[in-house]
Image 1 (cartoon, chains in turn green, cyan):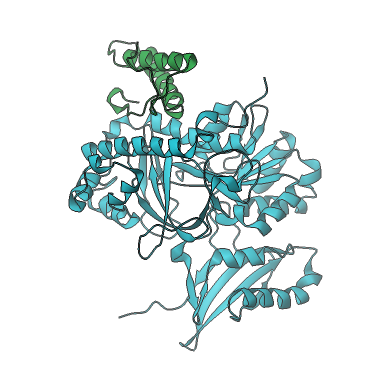
Image 2 (image 1 turned 60 degrees about the vertical axis):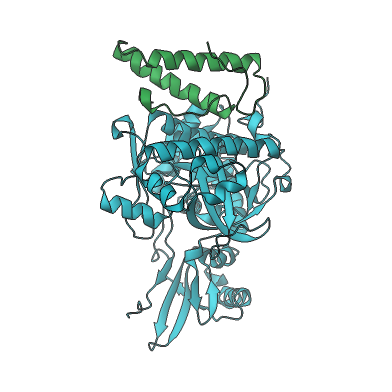
Amino acid sequence: MTATNTDLLGKPLTGQEQELLNVYEALKKLARQDDLPPCAARNVRRALSSMWQVTNDLNLQFEQLYDVGV
Amino acid sequence: MPYSEFWNPKNEKLPREELRALQLHKLRRMCEWAYATTPFHKRKFDAAGFKPDQLRTLDDIRRIPFMTREEWMESLMEKPMFGDLLATDPVNAIRYHLTSGTSGRTPIRVLDSTKDWDWIAEMWCYGLWGFGIRPEDIVYFAFGYGSFIGFWGAHYACEKMGALVIPGGAQTTEARIKQIIEMGATTVCSTPTYALHLWQKAREMGIDLAREGKVNKLICSGEPAGSIPAVKQQLEEAWGAKCGDTAGMTELGTIMIFECSHQPGGTHIIEDHFIEEVLNPSSGEPVGYDELGERVVTSFGRGFIPVLRYRTKDMVMKVPASTCSCGRTWDLYDGGIRGRWDDMKLIRGTNVYPRAVEAIVREYPAIDEFQIYISRRDDMQDEITIKVEIKPGHESEWPDLKVKLAKDLAEAHEGLRFNIERMDYGVLPHFELKAKRLVDVRPVAQY
């Protein structure tokens, strides 16, 4: 799903971290789909926002998400 | 499985070398973002000849120009409502807040997206979890829930942590006390001033909060008093609870420091999300551990309005992480926020800081509310008067208290004479949010 297998400090991801990052990337991909019904579009964004916190806290990514309205 | 003591064990115990590497990575990215999206920062970077790719070590942070509140306000006035600080279209915002305007200036207005707003709560999670709040807790917010950001983030943090949240909202103090008791609240979030007021009002209602309530944690924010030992001691005795200090600012949207459950006499800096520099306020040069200086903050959170090297005018003293026994590798501010550099008053040649006065006044449990009143006599001599209200039932302590308090204040201020004046109970203003206890009626110099 994602190309990276290290965190922002270059440490290898644990299995758990890889899973979390995969969920984040999957949500990001979903948020880019413009034909989701409102109930999906908005809740996917809420979920993506939560996963941004997790992956940011664990140094798995550091990026902005305004391009998908999050 | 027992709970972790840390909200984010990975980063709260990260070796400092790695922490610095993480900060450098985030700093570069945040500067690139700010330069590419925010006219305010692009203008300043260009004027200073700074480019984000010049950030090769963390010390290169000094290449980034300072950001000041005055510049922010100028930008807001030139281009209402948000100036040229927004990094993205306002349509991405879900939340609007503004500063409390304590000092009477133009309020700073801010916008947050879904992610930013979640992040604001996330920072509170670090602090609240660190002080011991858990899903089993019942958390009462003695807070008015207006446009001032206050405890909004803490409210959402507690929901996120799975605690039961009771929003106190617009109610009388009496109604709030009744709710705290009847709902069995275990934690109360409030300003230190209002926590003292709640206790005093409860006493008037015949309620002993320490005996009849279940509150075991008080979370203070909004004023420096949460780290003043005498205030903390009074609060802990009054409520029968541990009192933890936090501090944040609307400009960041959230807290950047918190006291952990080990109560080391200071507040940890959330260093995986902020860089906190401590600088000499005159020269702008860094000061070392154990030296007083001005906090200058860089945030890696809210991307909507990037905050880079923002001069806060807060007075702090950084001490190493090893000062605390909790195991976090994050440095601390000993005594939390110690006041503001621009709070200092010059009285007959002596520097007087309101926080230092409060620290002494609060050593007298018989004093309820107080005010620092500065005036000028005969257009010549400055006078400083401490107006105090004595708690009901403690009136007999007044004659001795008056003499001792004047002596203590003078000894702490190079012999400066303080007038002590007793006010009738209920005459002085009582505060729920940020207390305004300094009244300076000296004429403003005209040139």
